Amino acid sequence: MPVIPSAQARATRTPNGVMTTLASPTQGEAGHCLWRVDATPGMEGPLHAFDTEVLWTWLDGSAVVELDGERYEVGPGDTMVLPAGAPRRMFADAERGFTAVAAAPPGAQAYNPGGVSDPDACDLAPKGDERTTPPWLR
Image (cartoon, rainbow, N blue to C red):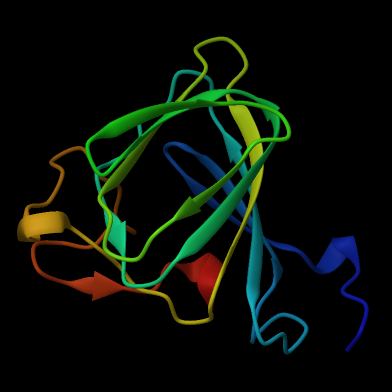
């Protein structure tokens, strides 16, 4: 289907915000995954990595992204290329949070660098050495 009506967007709520699938193999039969991230103000995401490159573009608000030991401040209009295997963690602006869109290949898997689970990670996060495909990438 070439048009995916906004009413068909699939939202997944996490403790850190809402991930809204805009296109994926199960939504519009897309060959890529595209999702919107509405991060809760002040959220501190878990340390994790993906087995593939992930692209992020910030639309509103701001964040600090820890990527492979470096810290980057990002805001509206900024795009980051997050390489496969690079440990990452995001921190949203304390007052505004952030809104971004992200893209990755279908079936991309998230995992814990070194196999160590974040004790505060939500139920959707991988446990131990597990690799999981988040719902917004299906």
